[in-house]
Amino acid sequence: PYFDNLPQAISFPYDFWEDLIEIYRKTDRDGLERAFSVFWADGEVLFTEVKTGSDRMVKSGGSIQVKYSHHPTKKGYARKELYIDSKLAKRKDVYFKDVPKALEVQYLFNIHTHPKHIHEDGNTHYNFFSAQDIKSLISSKAIMTGLVTDKLLLLVRSSRTPDTVEKLVDSEVNPYYVEHVLKMGLYEASFSKKAYRYKIVNES
Image (cartoon, rainbow, N blue to C red; front, top):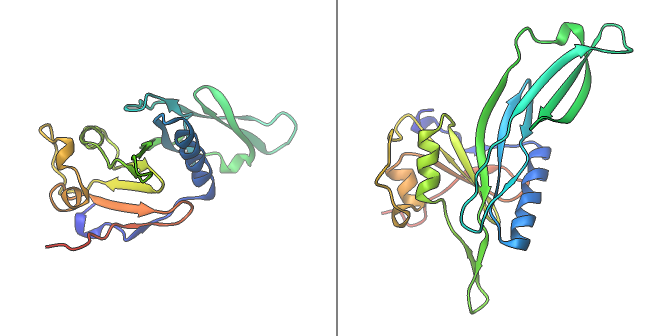
């Protein structure tokens, strides 16, 4: 999308937040990064199973399949089955006339968690997106990536985002840099709320 036309807010369905909050809680307990891939599968948003990593790195993956078959007992109906990583995730009955001529399964984006860091004085903080997170987004076909801390952060690439950032290092990555230099949209959401465009404080 064009940088100047990025939306002011992004909404997600209830099921999305259920899965996201669950991986947040697991990471909060054991300090391990987790990730899932988000897919659009024939009109539904689905998530691959979480791949658990170390306290510094995680790899996500997963596959989605959609299958339609004749319903075993209902005339005029087909059975729709959604598989995540070869395991049946959802099953529903649909009218034959509603079965699409072509199946659409599309990878949307990846979300991963960062564990909290606890200081000697008891205060905590979470790391921001890493340089590798941004490099992975730019080299992929996805338009955005997500980070779960005690909130949800989203980075959305635009038509003005550079095609490569090979020399980017972690010390450069901050909210101002991704918005003003990389021309990405940065969004922030409290759990179960809309993600709103991040407002840079004290811009110069």
